Amino acid sequence: MLDEIIISQAIIDTYKDKLVRVLDVDVAICGAGPSGLVCAITLAKANKKVVIFEKKLSIGGGMWGGGMMFNEIVVQDKAKKILDEFSIRTKSYKDNYYTADAVECVCGLGYQATQRGVIIINGISVEDVLVREDKVCGLVINWSAVNIANLHVDPLTIRAKFVVDATGHACEVVSIVEKKSGIKVKTKTGKILGEKSMWADLAESMVESNTKEVCPGLVVCGMCANSVFGSFRMGPIFGGMLLSGKRAAELIISKLD
Image 1 (cartoon, helix red, strand yellow):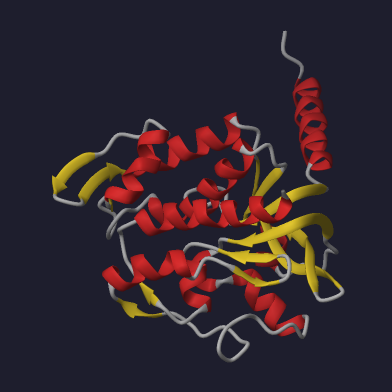
Image 2 (tube, rainbow, N blue to C red):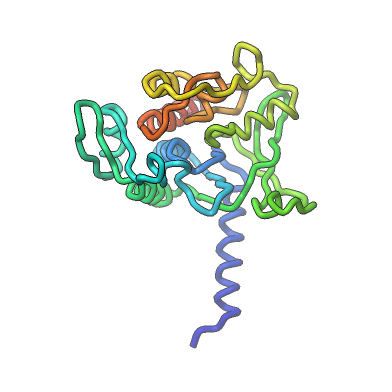
Protein backbone atom coordinates (compact mmCIF):
# COMPACT_ATOMS: atom_id res chain seq x y z
CA MET A 1 0.00 0.00 0.00
CA LEU A 2 1.07 3.58 -0.66
CA ASP A 3 0.86 6.06 2.19
CA GLU A 4 0.21 9.69 1.20
CA ILE A 5 2.03 10.95 4.29
CA ILE A 6 5.17 9.01 3.41
CA ILE A 7 5.01 10.44 -0.11
CA SER A 8 4.82 13.96 1.32
CA GLN A 9 7.60 13.25 3.81
CA ALA A 10 9.86 11.92 1.05
CA ILE A 11 9.42 15.11 -0.97
CA ILE A 12 9.96 17.40 2.02
CA ASP A 13 13.04 15.55 3.26
CA THR A 14 14.80 15.32 -0.09
CA TYR A 15 13.98 18.90 -1.11
CA LYS A 16 15.23 20.16 2.24
CA ASP A 17 18.51 18.30 1.73
CA LYS A 18 18.82 19.80 -1.74
CA LEU A 19 18.34 23.34 -0.42
CA VAL A 20 20.83 22.85 2.41
CA ARG A 21 23.46 21.70 -0.12
CA VAL A 22 23.19 24.96 -2.09
CA LEU A 23 23.33 27.43 0.80
CA ASP A 24 27.06 27.90 0.16
CA VAL A 25 28.37 27.23 -3.35
CA ASP A 26 31.18 28.08 -5.71
CA VAL A 27 28.83 29.53 -8.33
CA ALA A 28 25.16 30.52 -8.27
CA ILE A 29 23.65 30.95 -11.73
CA CYS A 30 20.47 32.93 -12.24
CA GLY A 31 18.53 31.62 -15.21
CA ALA A 32 18.40 28.12 -16.70
CA GLY A 33 18.39 29.13 -20.33
CA PRO A 34 20.94 27.76 -22.81
CA SER A 35 23.81 29.97 -21.67
CA GLY A 36 23.14 29.29 -17.99
CA LEU A 37 22.94 25.54 -18.56
CA VAL A 38 26.16 25.36 -20.58
CA CYS A 39 27.89 27.53 -17.99
CA ALA A 40 26.75 25.16 -15.24
CA ILE A 41 27.80 22.02 -17.11
CA THR A 42 31.26 23.42 -17.83
CA LEU A 43 31.73 24.43 -14.19
CA ALA A 44 30.53 21.06 -12.93
CA LYS A 45 32.97 19.27 -15.24
CA ALA A 46 35.69 21.28 -13.46
CA ASN A 47 34.40 19.97 -10.10
CA LYS A 48 32.84 23.27 -9.01
CA LYS A 49 29.77 23.31 -6.79
CA VAL A 50 26.99 24.89 -8.85
CA VAL A 51 23.35 25.79 -8.40
CA ILE A 52 20.95 27.30 -10.93
CA PHE A 53 17.91 29.27 -9.81
CA GLU A 54 15.17 29.49 -12.43
CA LYS A 55 12.14 31.69 -11.81
CA LYS A 56 9.87 29.66 -14.09
CA LEU A 57 8.84 26.05 -13.61
CA SER A 58 10.50 25.11 -16.90
CA ILE A 59 14.15 25.40 -17.85
CA GLY A 60 15.42 26.32 -21.32
CA GLY A 61 14.61 30.02 -21.53
CA GLY A 62 13.66 31.07 -25.06
CA MET A 63 15.06 27.92 -26.64
CA TRP A 64 11.83 25.89 -26.33
CA GLY A 65 9.99 28.03 -28.87
CA GLY A 66 12.72 28.19 -31.52
CA GLY A 67 11.73 30.94 -33.95
CA MET A 68 8.13 32.12 -33.59
CA MET A 69 7.12 28.76 -32.03
CA PHE A 70 8.69 26.74 -34.87
CA ASN A 71 10.62 24.57 -32.45
CA GLU A 72 13.85 24.40 -34.41
CA ILE A 73 16.95 26.45 -33.65
CA VAL A 74 20.03 27.34 -35.67
CA VAL A 75 23.67 27.13 -34.62
CA GLN A 76 26.91 27.78 -36.49
CA ASP A 77 30.05 25.62 -36.87
CA LYS A 78 31.76 26.80 -33.70
CA ALA A 79 28.74 26.21 -31.48
CA LYS A 80 27.80 22.90 -33.12
CA LYS A 81 30.82 21.38 -31.36
CA ILE A 82 29.17 22.04 -27.99
CA LEU A 83 26.00 20.24 -29.05
CA ASP A 84 28.12 17.40 -30.45
CA GLU A 85 29.85 17.08 -27.08
CA PHE A 86 26.47 16.56 -25.43
CA SER A 87 25.22 14.12 -28.11
CA ILE A 88 22.55 16.57 -29.26
CA ARG A 89 21.80 15.95 -32.92
CA THR A 90 22.10 18.61 -35.62
CA LYS A 91 21.36 18.73 -39.33
CA SER A 92 23.41 20.63 -41.88
CA TYR A 93 21.28 23.18 -43.73
CA LYS A 94 23.87 25.29 -45.55
CA ASP A 95 27.54 26.01 -44.98
CA ASN A 96 27.94 27.21 -41.35
CA TYR A 97 24.18 26.77 -40.64
CA TYR A 98 22.92 23.79 -38.65
CA THR A 99 19.44 23.16 -37.31
CA ALA A 100 18.60 21.33 -34.09
CA ASP A 101 15.36 20.31 -32.43
CA ALA A 102 14.67 22.86 -29.70
CA VAL A 103 13.08 20.32 -27.36
CA GLU A 104 16.01 17.91 -27.73
CA CYS A 105 18.43 20.76 -27.02
CA VAL A 106 16.73 21.82 -23.80
CA CYS A 107 16.23 18.28 -22.55
CA GLY A 108 19.77 17.32 -23.49
CA LEU A 109 21.35 20.28 -21.72
CA GLY A 110 19.18 19.79 -18.66
CA TYR A 111 20.07 16.11 -18.50
CA GLN A 112 23.79 16.80 -18.88
CA ALA A 113 23.66 19.42 -16.12
CA THR A 114 21.83 17.29 -13.57
CA GLN A 115 23.89 14.19 -14.35
CA ARG A 116 27.05 16.16 -13.60
CA GLY A 117 25.75 17.24 -10.20
CA VAL A 118 24.31 20.67 -10.98
CA ILE A 119 21.35 21.39 -8.73
CA ILE A 120 18.54 23.24 -10.51
CA ILE A 121 15.96 24.91 -8.28
CA ASN A 122 12.97 26.09 -10.30
CA GLY A 123 10.16 28.40 -9.25
CA ILE A 124 12.65 30.67 -7.48
CA SER A 125 13.22 34.38 -8.15
CA VAL A 126 16.21 36.48 -7.20
CA GLU A 127 15.03 39.62 -5.44
CA ASP A 128 18.33 40.96 -4.10
CA VAL A 129 22.05 40.26 -3.85
CA LEU A 130 24.54 40.02 -1.04
CA VAL A 131 27.30 42.62 -1.32
CA ARG A 132 30.34 42.78 0.94
CA GLU A 133 33.11 45.33 0.36
CA ASP A 134 31.76 46.13 -3.13
CA LYS A 135 31.77 42.46 -4.18
CA VAL A 136 28.71 40.42 -5.05
CA CYS A 137 28.94 37.34 -2.86
CA GLY A 138 25.48 35.80 -2.86
CA LEU A 139 21.80 35.96 -3.66
CA VAL A 140 18.57 36.75 -1.87
CA ILE A 141 15.88 34.36 -3.11
CA ASN A 142 12.16 33.84 -2.77
CA TRP A 143 9.41 31.81 -4.38
CA SER A 144 8.40 33.27 -7.75
CA ALA A 145 4.77 32.82 -6.69
CA VAL A 146 5.38 35.12 -3.70
CA ASN A 147 6.59 37.87 -6.01
CA ILE A 148 3.78 37.33 -8.50
CA ALA A 149 1.17 37.52 -5.74
CA ASN A 150 2.96 40.51 -4.15
CA LEU A 151 2.95 38.81 -0.75
CA HIS A 152 5.02 40.16 2.11
CA VAL A 153 7.21 37.11 2.74
CA ASP A 154 10.82 37.52 3.77
CA PRO A 155 13.42 35.77 1.60
CA LEU A 156 16.36 33.47 2.27
CA THR A 157 20.00 33.94 1.30
CA ILE A 158 22.59 31.95 -0.62
CA ARG A 159 26.34 32.52 -0.46
CA ALA A 160 28.47 32.11 -3.58
CA LYS A 161 32.03 32.87 -4.64
CA PHE A 162 30.63 33.99 -8.00
CA VAL A 163 27.17 34.87 -9.28
CA VAL A 164 26.25 34.56 -12.97
CA ASP A 165 23.46 36.63 -14.48
CA ALA A 166 21.99 34.49 -17.25
CA THR A 167 18.50 36.00 -17.06
CA GLY A 168 18.40 37.08 -20.71
CA HIS A 169 17.09 40.38 -22.04
CA ALA A 170 16.02 41.65 -18.62
CA CYS A 171 19.50 41.27 -17.01
CA GLU A 172 17.69 41.03 -13.68
CA VAL A 173 20.66 40.60 -11.34
CA VAL A 174 22.70 43.41 -12.87
CA SER A 175 19.61 45.63 -12.61
CA ILE A 176 19.42 44.90 -8.88
CA VAL A 177 23.11 45.64 -8.40
CA GLU A 178 22.80 48.89 -10.34
CA LYS A 179 19.76 50.10 -8.41
CA LYS A 180 20.54 48.97 -4.88
CA SER A 181 24.28 48.52 -4.31
CA GLY A 182 25.82 51.72 -5.61
CA ILE A 183 28.32 49.64 -7.60
CA LYS A 184 29.07 50.85 -11.11
CA VAL A 185 29.21 48.10 -13.72
CA LYS A 186 31.99 47.99 -16.28
CA THR A 187 30.20 49.75 -19.12
CA LYS A 188 30.93 53.17 -20.64
CA THR A 189 28.39 54.82 -18.32
CA GLY A 190 28.64 52.51 -15.34
CA LYS A 191 25.03 51.48 -15.98
CA ILE A 192 23.13 48.99 -18.14
CA LEU A 193 23.21 50.27 -21.72
CA GLY A 194 20.23 48.23 -22.99
CA GLU A 195 19.92 45.99 -26.01
CA LYS A 196 19.61 47.21 -29.59
CA SER A 197 17.44 45.87 -32.40
CA MET A 198 18.19 42.57 -34.13
CA TRP A 199 21.44 42.11 -36.06
CA ALA A 200 22.28 38.43 -35.83
CA ASP A 201 25.81 38.56 -37.24
CA LEU A 202 27.07 41.29 -34.90
CA ALA A 203 25.07 40.02 -31.93
CA GLU A 204 26.51 36.52 -32.25
CA SER A 205 30.08 37.77 -32.38
CA MET A 206 29.64 40.35 -29.62
CA VAL A 207 27.90 38.12 -27.07
CA GLU A 208 31.16 36.25 -26.50
CA SER A 209 33.23 39.40 -26.06
CA ASN A 210 30.56 40.88 -23.78
CA THR A 211 30.71 37.83 -21.53
CA LYS A 212 32.77 39.13 -18.63
CA GLU A 213 32.86 40.06 -14.96
CA VAL A 214 30.85 43.28 -14.85
CA CYS A 215 31.71 43.97 -11.21
CA PRO A 216 33.58 41.93 -8.60
CA GLY A 217 31.85 38.57 -8.17
CA LEU A 218 29.24 39.05 -10.92
CA VAL A 219 29.61 37.59 -14.42
CA VAL A 220 27.15 38.09 -17.28
CA CYS A 221 26.48 35.69 -20.12
CA GLY A 222 24.01 35.08 -22.92
CA MET A 223 21.59 37.77 -24.00
CA CYS A 224 22.08 39.43 -20.63
CA ALA A 225 25.65 40.27 -21.67
CA ASN A 226 24.51 42.00 -24.84
CA SER A 227 21.81 43.89 -22.96
CA VAL A 228 24.24 45.15 -20.34
CA PHE A 229 26.77 46.33 -22.92
CA GLY A 230 24.32 47.83 -25.40
CA SER A 231 24.71 45.29 -28.17
CA PHE A 232 22.23 43.72 -30.55
CA ARG A 233 19.75 40.86 -30.21
CA MET A 234 20.17 37.82 -32.44
CA GLY A 235 16.87 35.98 -32.62
CA PRO A 236 16.57 32.19 -32.95
CA ILE A 237 20.24 31.44 -33.62
CA PHE A 238 21.56 30.06 -30.36
CA GLY A 239 25.24 29.46 -31.02
CA GLY A 240 26.29 32.60 -29.22
CA MET A 241 24.27 31.59 -26.17
CA LEU A 242 26.09 28.26 -25.92
CA LEU A 243 29.53 29.78 -26.52
CA SER A 244 28.87 32.58 -24.04
CA GLY A 245 27.92 30.12 -21.31
CA LYS A 246 31.13 28.19 -21.86
CA ARG A 247 33.20 31.37 -21.86
CA ALA A 248 31.62 32.55 -18.59
CA ALA A 249 32.44 29.25 -16.93
CA GLU A 250 36.03 29.29 -18.15
CA LEU A 251 36.47 32.83 -16.85
CA ILE A 252 35.20 31.81 -13.41
CA ILE A 253 37.27 28.63 -13.33
CA SER A 254 40.42 30.63 -14.04
CA LYS A 255 39.68 32.92 -11.10
CA LEU A 256 38.66 30.15 -8.69
CA ASP A 257 41.75 28.10 -9.54
